Image: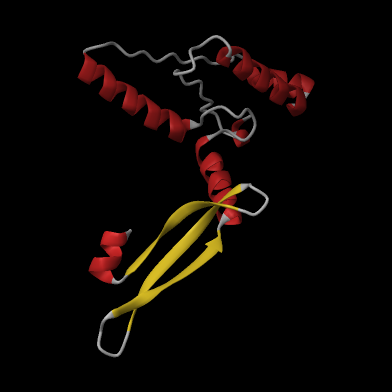
Length: 149
């Protein structure tokens, strides 16, 4: 921060601060150097703003971009990213990587016979059960779309 202020006369970044009640919250801090008539540094002005809501929105958008809304499992986008990372690590460490696809046969018949609510519950339960049988470092994903039920 001080090096940037010295070089450019301004600095801004996200920081974590503490409220009077002791809770920690995200804050945007912007600091600008002030100079007198001779061009000498006379002090700094700091402005801050609470960015808690913005961070909450960012987290929500991040979640929606990477996780299936129904099951909470990783979606196609996150699976692609994690699988690419797994391949990279496997190449670097000369290890194997695997991918397992599971399809629920006649799932459309389940929805047609018992209704979408039952089908949704089945998908959630399958995801939960699969997730409980893999390592924490593994990824269980749902590639299907809500509209393709």
